[in-house]
Image (tube, rainbow, N blue to C red; front, side, top):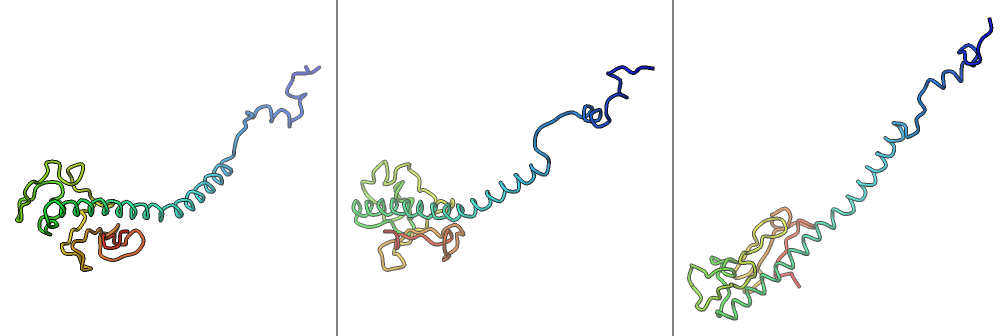
Amino acid sequence: MKQSPLSPVSCPRSSRTSDLRPRTSGFTLVEILVVIAIISLLAGVVLLNIAPQIGMGSQAAAKAQIQVLSSAATTYRMAHGRYPTQQQGLEALVRKPAQEPIPENYPDSGYLSGRTVPTDPWKNAYIYLCPGRQNEPFEILSYGADNEPGGSGADADVSSSFVD
């Protein structure tokens, strides 16, 4: 019996099995896992280097806000002959105080734009002391990221006493 050239018996075994497997191109699972591990490692290194800079950016924002609040308090003093009392607080910069001494000729727009006292970059209220702790007429401060006195880095206090 003569076999046809297309018969499976006439084909060598290795070519017959390779024809049955689908031909695919791409990456193996191990290669994909290695790439994911490398990307994760690089992302971790980048985050470790960027995280402290984010905290320092918040410190700079707090210093800028404290300078604006200090300027508004000084403008209040120039208009009324005194700084707001500690009881009146920073709210006296955005609306006419209800506590004595009540200033005359208080401007409708207040002394801060936006008609609200901003919170610090960590969403905490600024602290207003009158008189200040360093023999200043007043002090405006934020306790930093941890909202506790003292600290370093992002947790460091920001005060009008130390703002240039």
